[in-house]
Image (cartoon, rainbow, N blue to C red; front, side):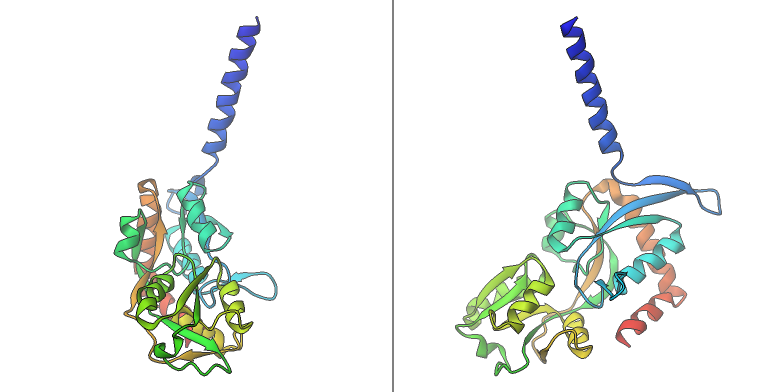
Length: 262
């Protein structure tokens, strides 16, 4: 009898784990107007990455990425649960299968693709550049010798800064979030930061950052892409690409970009 009880307990435990995993990822949530099943996905994003994703004074998550995702979901007839958790956490959640994909200003690179990132078509082309404190005397890369540059871990800006650090003699410091990076420069713990050019220029223009942008510090441009980390998410990528094509054609995409960047 004891052995029988143990077997039953083991079976119940296995069933509970299976049910828990079944709750992750996409699921049907009703029907679209054409009778097709409406899918719901879990999508992760970064934090404090204005104007692509940020939290407004009322606690609403807004930005270019958020508006593009919303427009595409409406166009393609799917819903999603948004996880506003930060860059490193978004990647980890996708890799663990806890999210179906991420939209977070992720540049499409061969290195990332080789590491298992699966990208959509590009939806925005951007460069990386440098910003410093408002009263800084730094005006060019040569002024960084012996100084520290802070970047967000694992980003294109990290790759850019690391690639020229030896040439210009500066130290690279890595943090997990954009707000932490900006705080180090504004607080004097770091001499400069590297980040995506539209983010730096937008945040400085709106007064969000009390810093100045160094013109001429940009690298070669690269496209942002929606990213997944599993071939099982191919349906979501197909929906994103189809919706992106449609909102570009109907003018909605241009309307979103103009609303934030003019």
